Length: 245
Image 1 (cartoon, rainbow, N blue to C red):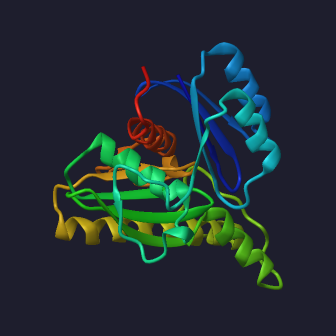
Image 2 (cartoon, helix red, strand yellow; image 1 turned 60 degrees about the vertical axis):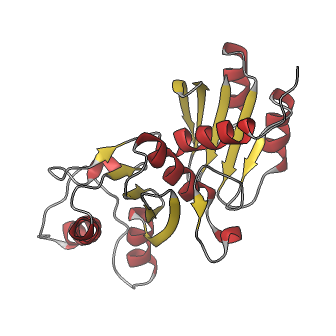
């Protein structure tokens, strides 16, 4: 079985895969070392893969290596089933790459748009012939709310809710409507532009805030798309290793 860890800006997702089937998933706001040990006690883990947004924490990496010594650390330059067409792959976030790989594994040989609504709002493209084409990065909900509060003299700090009015009737609801409705229109505008060029192509939605958006729009929601993609990258890596008797 494979241990998969996605260490993001605000939380860590840890999952276990048996082949391509996810059999367990944990989410933690703190260090994932405890989650690693918990899953190692429950499952016969043979391999591991990890992606980190930001600086690699040696303590976390060392804990993972004690469980799976051959653990794979994914970066933008790690070989994957996709051909990466990015000017500087060293700067490509491994979570963006993994989400693209995960989507391409679910819907191969077709044009794809992958939207991840997390700390950042990212839009990524995969071509029908298996090329990762890059995409866009925009502020996520939390960043937008904090920017309004921190960059102005009087606006309060507001948080997201499951729904927001189209128009606010006081300052708090106006901020919530502006951020959430504006984000929704940004997402829907990107989907419209993509489907104008590729009318029947799939659009994937993932990330911690994905459930708040695109109701009534045909999209494929995949909560664990990054984890599935990391597992695909690990399987690809293992397939390239020399076979031993």
